[in-house]
Image 1 (cartoon, rainbow, N blue to C red):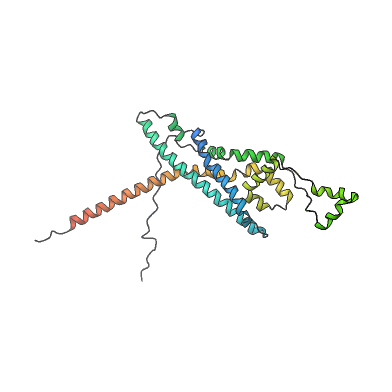
Image 2: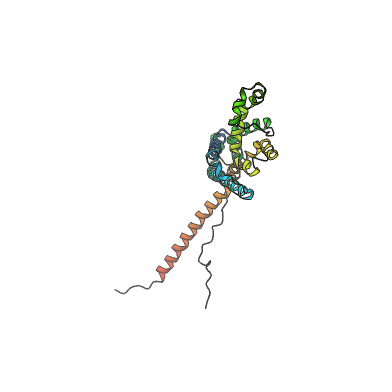
Length: 270
């Protein structure tokens, strides 16, 4: 019995076809404006952590680590995909711009801003993450190791507050600490880097202090994936060209087969 190869009828993946392109500028107003999408992703993720972060909290350390790592991976993939789409679009535009220059036409400055540059995606990511990074830097400069704070005063002790010798000691329970900018920055930044906070465990004060000090760098982890995805622009564009060439060759081969079959077909008798 003859065995058939299940992969025999499968189509080969088209080989990438790279085409030259005109290199643009890494830093431009257009690249900075694109950072609004990166900023939006970061802000929305912080809001989602505020409402859904409890799902990622568990007493099992290894499970908590995997869950939060998976969340970081999902957000990083979204950033990567957004950057890859922008990179492919810029690579396609850069190919057209190069053909225009080779035809003797002048390429406007705004078109150079649109053309692909390998570092443009990282500039976009930095521009979008900059407000959060600055806030994290302020928080990191003020970060301190967490200390013990007084809890609520037991109800049965309230009757002793009227005594002069006891009331003075219990007055510390009624002191209020004003909510300032440092508290706002701490909450906002920890929500932004919540997976890292959760992986370290908030009960470990030394680890939390390290997380706070490194928060400006940790805030850049997922936005950096936008830049990584953007660098894939020419490669993705090459796959598009390869697919077009493969389809063109396939249609041409099919047309040749049809013509040969027509020539071999015997004339019909009337």
